[in-house]
Image (cartoon, rainbow, N blue to C red; front, side, top):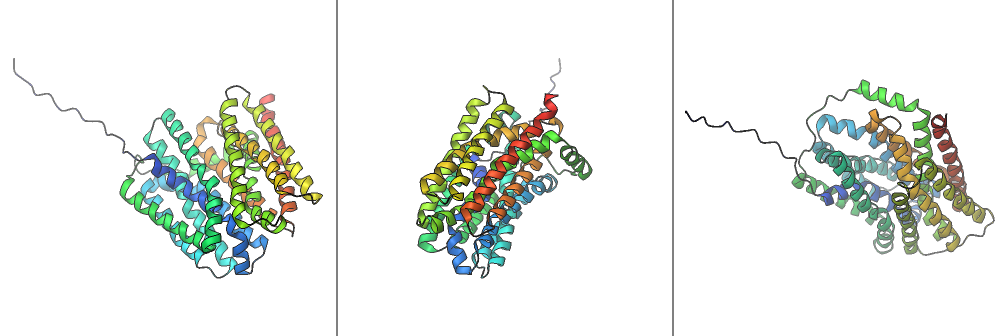
Length: 402
């Protein structure tokens, strides 16, 4: 019997390996640049001769840049690949950071911060996309949850780091530090990150626009997206106002601002842990409304203290801590409800939800900068945002009750 040599079987292509710590670093760099600069706002305002409203625009337009980036980076990376798109975003992040550090006027600083956000958003969007490229859905969800847990450390530590840099080296040192971080991320991406997408996509813009149109005409999606934005990113309004509330109105030193903001981020952590415990045990729609109700009570409590000029550190931090716990519970539940409205367009729903969320945060932050009483302006914004969120959640659930 003649011997036939067996034909070699084609070996399956193994997915590339990307360290999770690198994806975490890339993901949180974008939001880090928002939180770390907040303690520097009063010093930068004095140096540039700018008002409170103008300085808060450096935060609100940064948030808007993060919103726009969530719509554009996904399709671009599908067409040209994750790696080149990410490296292009990091280049913008570095150059814009240097431009911000060297700016001589508030308008130049605002413009540079907008481009810094557009660059930094690349890591925010593509870090999660790369995880999905490399893992099955269940494993990807586990890794994204772990990555989100690690990235939450950024907003908690950033204000304290920013306060320390501002006090010792001045506000411009924060922007030089962010540019240096961008260079490090670029080099790490170049050395350690292979291309993870499955090949160039033609990106059917007609299908993409059809998906967005379906979502924008869905009362359920709009209710959860708009409600989720008002319930969660409205807190950015207080984050941007906090340095002026604590240093100007409560006469506290700059280095304490980061500590107080860290306490609020701890509230978001607590809310997230409560959400993970309660979601399997309670109806999600009911949990969402009840968690936002806690934020309503806290928001109106803060408004009462500001309206009657009875502000104190304990009152402000106490009210906002309860508010942030509500944010921590509402954030994952609102997102989960929104992307579940139409299972056929989960990716589009996620991007549009993120855009809506960040846009609302940018608007709330800009409105909180109006007037000459930061605490009162911010309290009005937070109280109104919670009420609008509650109404939006009610509208979102109406079709399901019929």
